[in-house]
Image 1 (cartoon, rainbow, N blue to C red):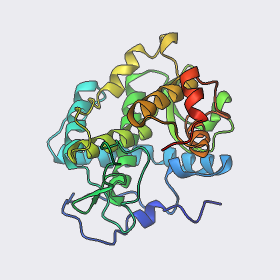
Image 2: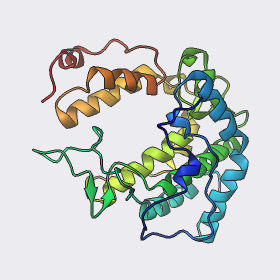
Image 3: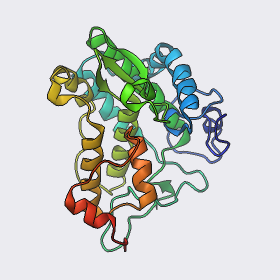
Image 4: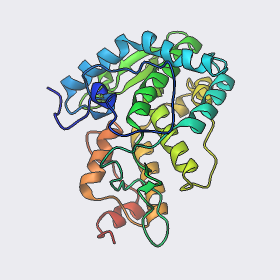
Length: 281
């Protein structure tokens, strides 16, 4: 059973307020299940991932058709995805739905106060519901292109990996020969959130080219580049501390560990371990 608190793609398709942006002739994904990053159990993760993977080719075609209507080349290479990323960054919208302006601890701090959670009626932390549907389709297109560019690659669900069999996330990822090549759904979501913050003036750095997701395939076979969720989590915490000066709460730490596919919090470097036991301001 899915959590009744989580929106489904069907409910995301029913926006309640008007939006200035329009994307004509686009039929969003609207089945009655929650997004794959919002599943709450291992069984639910596999069910949702299976449904998403089953429609990967169909939904990727919708994203490709949108790019073609916009005059953007569609191809499984880095340069084409750089262009697709530029279009996405120019058009992505924040949510204007009621409650979408709630604070997110991942928002860049505007010293000495937290950054605004809404600018001009547009959420700085939540994507427009319609764009959450688009994000899924573009993630599936990116994944299909990864498969096309790398012989032997294919989709799998995160908790199908032996090292992550307790993970409750329904994220679909691309693997080949036991190597994780990428998390295309997550990569698109992260790209869109950074692009939104940049457009709203909360980040001063340029958005990294989306084509980098394809460029990493070239080096993915190098054992040094294989996925290391513990190291990735620690790097994320180092970034958080550099930005805010304190560690996330204990509950947030364990939620982050789950998001990185870990059963428990890994040993932390001394500087993070000290901050972990301090009370955040």
